[in-house]
Image (tube, rainbow, N blue to C red; front, side):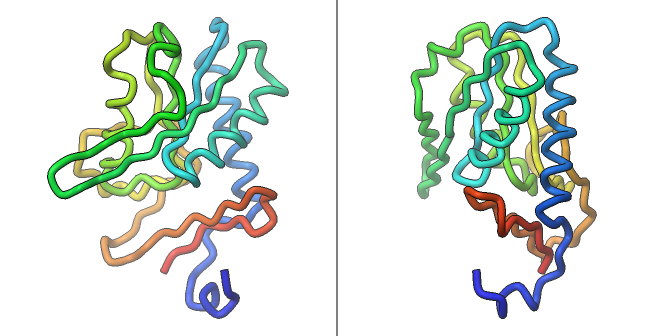
Length: 173
């Protein structure tokens, strides 16, 4: 991302603050699942998956349960929605599912994400977002949130997560 693009944006969370939020979320997930043997962390799209992998990394150091991470991609077309999961849904039967997304705006993406797991029974589904903008249109509740951010609809929240974490940031424009 070019520095000129970032100059017009307000930094909300820097890379250290993002890491701190991820650590806190990982501990909350641990507390919610102390007696479990396995947890599935499903990241929504590219940034949701990067966030899920970072949560998995922290959990792998502190939790006794095994962790499986998967990526969900939502494709919206004019009259349909398709959710692609990079694993077979039956693998998650009777599992703990944690849906992870970078920003919750309307709740549409997480609502579509639920559909990937509804054909098989599961123990529980939880949601994680790094930033909750509280403009919900869909009846989605967030279980674990890094930051609740009051914004107006015209404002845009951009989450930048790279593989190494060097250029991480949450920006408001």
